[in-house]
Length: 218
Ligand SMILES: [Zn+2]
Image (tube, rainbow, N blue to C red; front, side, top):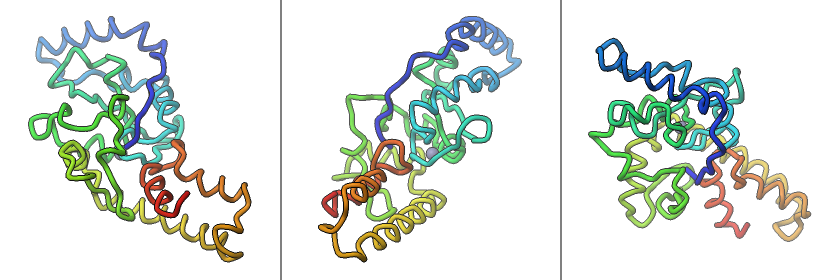
């Protein structure tokens, strides 16, 4: 997880949220439905804007979720609709998520979002609470927020460990090829930039790579 800066609200949401909200609350009051319409809160324009905010990565685990119609990102209600129905179409409550983080997360009665890290809260840096040992995610300095975030979104699940370890191996292979010509001092500026690109925000698992690269003085 890293900090995500929110872009302006998409037009489709601005224009329709009041109408969508009214219809949802009326149907919900009658007991007809429990959830808002997916085709509304997860409209392609909303997913595209959320994707542009995170470089098409899950807000929680930082895996790449694909671009446009070919990708399969989900739109997550950060505060669950069952907890706060009035936030069903609130722009600040819509987060981009991979299927695993969205569908597998523990609900609010188990771990409330208020006790976890919020990628859209710029007052807090996830790097102060989360650390990586290779591909293994842990809470930093026994941070309770870090620990609860890992538990809530299951950021230590096998599927993510496999994805992270594969990326680390690819990176190590790339680094070895560069180093074979003679250590860190022999690297060109372009090669150093290529190495550092792994910790840029657009890269999958950039927090893991920034911790890994810092260890090697990059
Ligand atoms: Zn995820």
